[in-house]
Image (cartoon, rainbow, N blue to C red; front, side):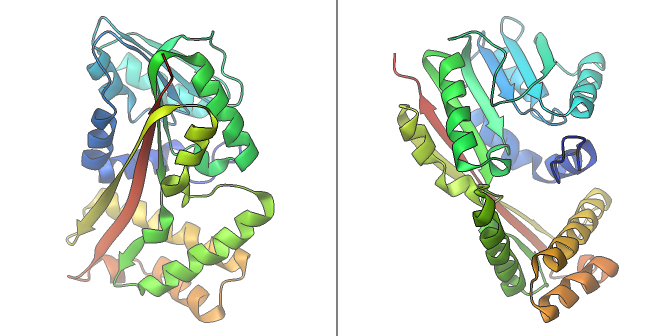
Amino acid sequence: MTSTGHAVSDAPWLDLHFQIARAEYEEALRFVGIEPGWNVLDAGCGSGGYIPLLCELVGPAGQVAALDLAPENVTQVERIIQDGHCAAPVNLRVGSVLDLPFADATFDCVWCANVAQYLTDVEFTRVMGEFRRVTKPGGIVAVKDSDGTLLQLLPLDPAIWARHVAVRRAKAAETGVLGAWCGSSLARFFRQAGLIDIVRKGWLVERWAPVPAYARQFHTMGLRYHAKLAAENGLSRSDCEALAAAAEDPDHLFDDPDFCFREYFVVTLGRVPA
């Protein structure tokens, strides 16, 4: 939990998750088509996992701006910069994607990863308007987010996850929050914002046994989070007990030779009309 109240968006969680899915995450970022010399915004940069590659893609002739709502995440990014992991200048600041502190037509590309899920329909509509505003004519807006309907942690029964997501979606519908399953359904916001040449591509992250130490740490955190969430959201008693048991003894899952973690995410990108 960050100081701004966003679950599973603190640096320890984000860094471990990025380590697990690095190959697919970096392939997704390269898919966007960022070019050397570009000015790129990482909107909602979290702990900065994408920033070194963004800097590599734009090169020393380009520049990267990075913004996050949580000051502690921005501090983490400052360490990445100070440690010399960035091949381009980075303009870093605390701020909100709802009101970007940048002039119109500043960026060649806006990249936004795993932010939409925390916003309501109305809020993300506003965010897409902001992304279009700060992007140059002909520039790219690219948004990555999860589709949690495909989450699996075998040998835990996949039906438990399906019911868990169904209950979470019902709860989210009461507040209008898009949720961690919104990745496959964001193109409508691009159309509403007047973007063109809209493209979507999904990636499956799949990791089989054996489970390395960093993945064990991440999945243990995840199981505890989901077990607590399931109880709070009123999932059935049997499903709550199954998740609680897995969270209490996660090594039972991790040591299974048929262990498999699967998750799915989608990148949606569009272009601002020239």
